Length: 116
Image (cartoon, rainbow, N blue to C red):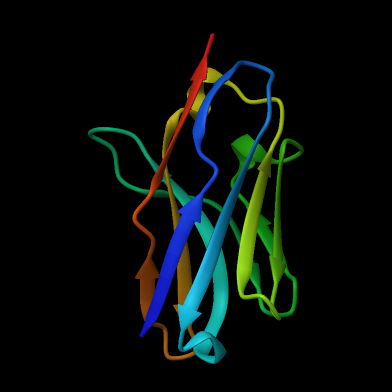
């Protein structure tokens, strides 16, 4: 079992920055990939960025060059630095972990609101 707790959401003006953090606990040695997803009302959850235990990253096209995902394997944390935020980045952001056995775990979510 893995537990994920997010922090760092909030309200920011367009062009501003926010940093999301996620701390994992429990069976952290089973975690292979960690990432961030986001969801707006009426839409499905979409991948924002992910990072493997070895540091390989993947970003959705709309955030490339603006967001940076990082991971500390020793502390079992994953952060998402979000720069040049746009109103369309407004969403609930969820931390995700995938274990070596391909089991998904989710955090409770944190709201990011970007005003125009």
